[in-house]
Image (cartoon, rainbow, N blue to C red; front, side, top):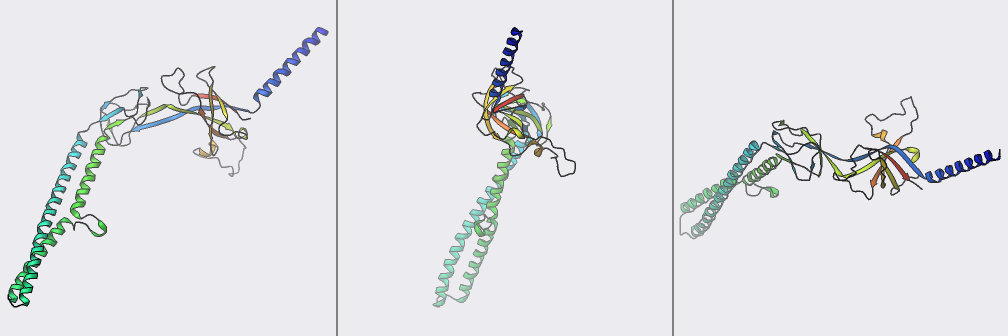
Amino acid sequence: MKKAQKVALTLVTGLALIAGYITIRDYGLESTDDAQVEGRIVNIASRVSGQVQKVFVTDNQVVKAGDPLVELDKQELQSRVAAAQAELSAARAALSSSESDVAAATSRLKLADIELDRIRTLGKSGVVSQSEVDTRKAQYDQAKAAYDQAMSRLGGGKGEGGAPGAALAKVQQAEAALELAKVNLSYTTITAPISGVISRKNVEVGQILAPMTNLMALVDLNDVWVVANFKEDQLKHMKVGQPTFIKVDTYKGEKFEGEVASIAAATGAKFSLIPPDNASGNFVKVVQRIPVYLHLKNFTNSPENALVLRPGMSAVVSIRTN
């Protein structure tokens, strides 16, 4: 009987110690299994229409920023560049011709003005007749009309408020059209905007693309984080900077360190397609969850690592809030 009592006492003592250890260990610890790894996913789309000539990548291929992904047929856009270049050359030639005409007309007008002033002075002194004065005045008027016509073709050089004249405006318009044609030509080579891994490739050689056609996705594994959806009653003591321990289902036994980076401004339900309306008459209280963003510490994610965190992986998160 005494032996049984000793065994029972030992068992009770052990259970009490275990319970006390669990209580101390779990004090100030908030956990959830509603968490997953997140990352940046960039959708690659065409910016111009055209036929696919080359595809440089395959699914799950690692690429660097600036690497070519897809090349479209350049012939049509190259022709547009040549046409825009020809229009610019014609506009510049027209501007140069107009400027030359204005320069010549200006010189003739100045000469006619000088001669008119001289003949008027002589007319006042009676050296020349009034008909000679009238002839010089008619010549001046012709020079002035020729000057006005040349200025009109040029567009007035500079209009009111410093606005460019017609000829200069045509040159600027042709320059802008050429620049746009060159930019569109550059879009025929689609490059990777960031480094990452190719996913969901949906483009093949010979395919006809329209602008904004989705071609593939690019997943940036160098920048990942964890989003944990905690219940609203778990956030009372949660703050930015608190230490975090993360376990990912893919890697059993591995633990990743992190910290609270930020806490969402609203519950996940508020961002759903149809947010719940508790004023509709039928109300059932449901504990809401708020996303908490976690930053990984002392860990650099890379496709070459033995442990690679990929967006969408499930995780279990614990945050020390005490």
